[in-house]
Image (cartoon, rainbow, N blue to C red; front, side, top):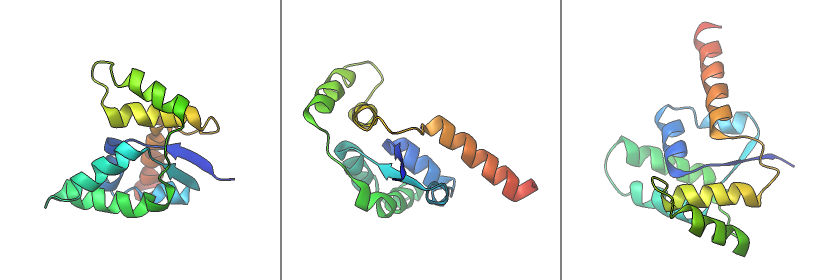
Length: 124
């Protein structure tokens, strides 16, 4: 069983903009996104800029991994989305991570790995 990584839109676009999205695959991680994140990526990909290109890359990367939320997770996402400064995609990503309790990677950990691997590549 592969290790799961739940991401929101900004995490995937940021990894893509930094040209480090491929490292997720190298680390053997399976990216899971909730429906709102998938929709946000599709919307962002419709424009003509670097963010759109990055969203397109992210979409092609996660296309097979999109999951829905179970009832309990939908309720959690509803509660979380009412919090200030937390949008629906972020709330659903947090709820999906709770739904998939075996998810052991957070973006913060992944980002540290990306920085470490890039540092190794450039200066190692």
